[in-house]
Image (tube, rainbow, N blue to C red):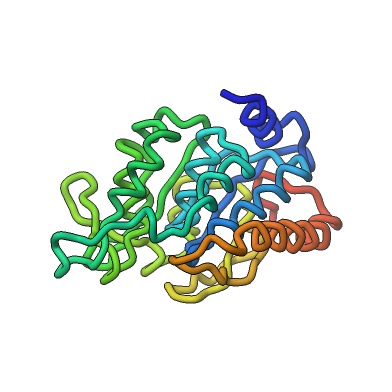
Length: 259
C-alpha cells in the first residue's frame, strides 16, 4: 500500500473528525460521473470527515469500491481518467442483451480491487436491479460481478449474473439506494453526493438523517478523457462550499435526533 493510500485511509477513518461521530456515504448513479464523485471525496477528506460505510450505484459504485479498497482520489483519477472510456469497452457477442460488454472494465479493476466485498477495508453496498425492476443492495460475495452489474445500463451493456440471476444498472430503479441503506444501517447519518440527473429514477430524501450535496451532471464522453481533471476540481470546490453551509450550524451525529 502506497503512502498516499495510507494517508487517505487515515483521513476517512478518523484521525480528524467533523463533530463527534462518523457518517456513512452514499454516491449516486450518474453518466460517466467518476470525476464528480472523486472531487466530492477530496472535499470530504480535506474536511477530515470520517466515513464508516459506503453505498454506491453505477459510476458511484466504481468510485465507492476504489475508496473502500483504500485508493486515494488522485490515484483513482489516474486510473479512471487516463484513457477514453471506450478503450475499456468491447462489443457484445449477445447484442440482443446489450450492445457492449463490461469485461474489459472488470479486467482493469481486477488489478486494484479484492475479489470479495469482505476483503475491502470499509463496508460497501452496491446498488443493482434485477430484470424485473427490483432494486437491491449487494454487500457480500464476489465484488467485480456486482460492480459490473451496477454499471450495466439497460440496452447498452449486457446484464451480469450475480448469485445466479441477471442484474443491471441499479440507477434505472433507484439512483441512490437510500432506503436500502436505511434498512442496512439504521440509526446512522449519511452524506449523500448526488450527481444531478441525466437518466435514472429520482429518490425523494428525508433530511432528518441525510445531508445532501449535489454536483452538476458530467459532460464526459465515451470517446474522450478531456475535462476529467476540471470536472473533479469543480466538484471538489462545489461540495466544499455546500458542506460549509450545511454543516456550520450543527455537528454531524450518527444517532437519530429525538422528536
